Image (cartoon, rainbow, N blue to C red; front, side, top):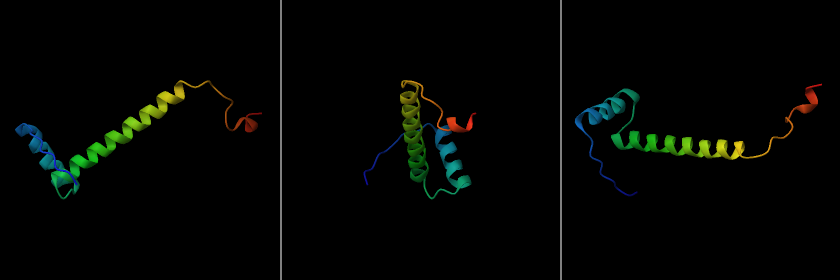
Length: 67
């Protein structure tokens, strides 16, 4: 695993420390890794939604049940 050092202002460090203790993370690194994973998931979902809006509309998957 690679290492990355991040500098935070005191208020943000305090916030991270609170999240670690209140939400059951073992370390601040675990908390930050989860935030990054969630952001990756959000970006992936956004790209899927944008790709979906760029495609032509089709019939509903349950069209047989409409009538």
